[in-house]
Image 1 (cartoon, rainbow, N blue to C red):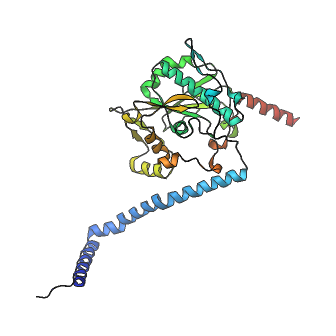
Image 2 (cartoon, one colour):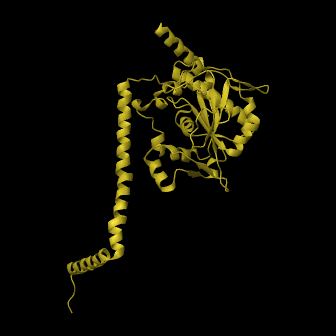
Image 3 (tube, rainbow, N blue to C red):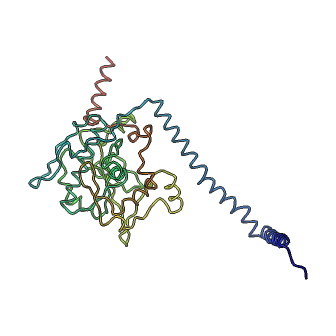
Length: 343
């Protein structure tokens, strides 16, 4: 009896594999797989792993060149003086004592941030008084983790809460807002369009500033457009878990949305019990697992904790709001200029 050598065994195995593959390819299942399923998988993989990153890189490159050609430069201080060192914002004798300190900022951008921080601190004091649970989210949470305050080129603030706490704020806290802050919802300002597929439920708006979104779009400012604080009221399921929507653009979030859908479930224990992080000299509430929250929006720790290069530090939409004039004042000024030019 002859003994098969390793090379003979390899040839025999290869021949066996060839026969099996040929039978599979010639079968109905094989034809369907190779003619329809495999090309679909290959096309899908090429979109996910090649086309989308390439398009995103191209768009980012265009954005960088656009900013360069526009010659837009922004004075950004990476270590500004914290709000708490510029003025007080607390409850004294049962009343809010939070004077406006915007003019202590050295640039329009920092003055804008001081407006947003004041509204955030007022919201925090009201929430604490009425046992309303909220937490910093999105850009404000990233600012707390990375800068211990506002992201130096950001122009608004973001908080999230459960629907039940939002209702409590409407019942007990809303009436305590100072008169210079406007509470913007679909009910109070039907001219402003809230995103339809978003948990963004309301905004606090400073009445004496202007984001200039509607002015730059050559529209009449028919809605309140002061510096905002965004309030996200999140729905909960039967287990108390929260549903987050609108993942940030980016490779990891695009892949996650493809696999699991645009909505992301946030486990209750990832939010509660709330923790505190320093924010502009104040201790504000953040999720219990705030690192997970940032990973959901901005990727791994070494990604979101890294300060972007200088060319990528710019306010949203490359717009610095006017911190000292309302949109109505700016519209009147534009009208006067047009009338003066026509003479």
